[in-house]
Image 1: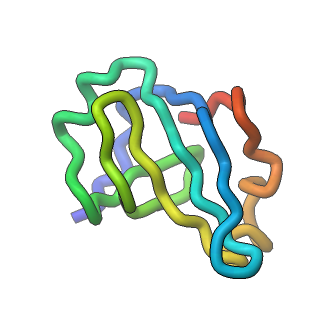
Image 2: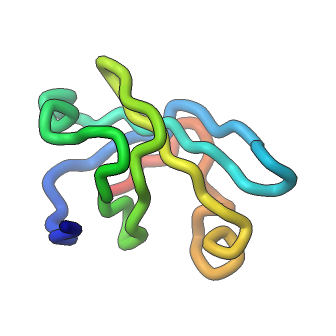
Image 3: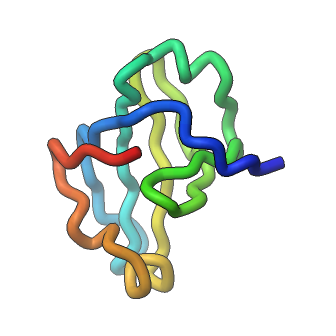
Length: 85
């Protein structure tokens, strides 16, 4: 269940373009221990947007953002080094 509680800030470490115009963002939380609470498919609030964890690594996670979400949010401006909450 998605709670929408902001627990940390993170930094975009990579952005890949996938499936036409969708993107996959790789996010490193400031406190990497946050990742121990996350599993594949978990919903994570990222600057007000609910994203599902697509991949989980020791220091970051990734999430896919569809064209429909890109068109109504500021995620098109997320680049390597962008800080989000």
